[in-house]
Length: 302
Image (cartoon, rainbow, N blue to C red; front, side, top):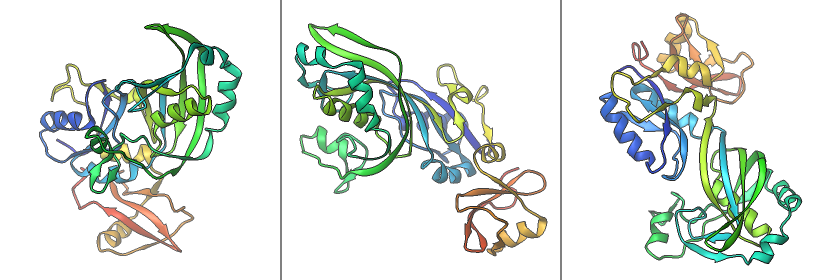
């Protein structure tokens, strides 16, 4: 199968590793990877690279992402989402005193450049072991705060006041545009802390990674090797990166490890394409020159 990206709408209950394993069988290759994990509970866009396109994943992991989430105020959980039992439940009076205006006011402090402590059940490694594995084995895990960027955190529709199993909660849907490394569960947790009623995530859907959108994704149900759609590596790179057209001499120089003169490019990675539109290299600016981050061998991209 040719190199490229496969955009999958991951169903709830599947791990990102499950999806990769399924795609290895469908694509008939071991060279399969993904650009950013989704929790089993979450649904939505998972960017899968196959064959040579796995080399693009390094540059996609750090791209901005968009999520649609449902946040519940009124209880905390071990995992900061609905996948574990309640730790604390707010009393109905406290929940009743929280106004829509107060929720919006606290959202302001969760926008822009903020410092966030990741959820303790994240995939971050602590002493060589995944944080979630340590938590589930009974260990206490304290993770360091990290700076992230929340470009948008807005309520969608009406704030809902619900009663379940005799407990009062506040639910609302939100859209979040954020930098890589953001934990949406932690946003729900921190909003609950700020309002002094607790909070957790009940639904999460990723709709965008870099320039790739959920509209381009395929569902796994019924997918087979015949119906599998691959976004050709050349088209995939042209969609994501700024394009620099390369002369035949440029191509030869890059494949011999040489640098090219800069033509006003920025430091962000960009694609170098030959006259036929084939991706030759992923490039970046270094001073007054262009250096390669990845160079694809001749014939690798069609």
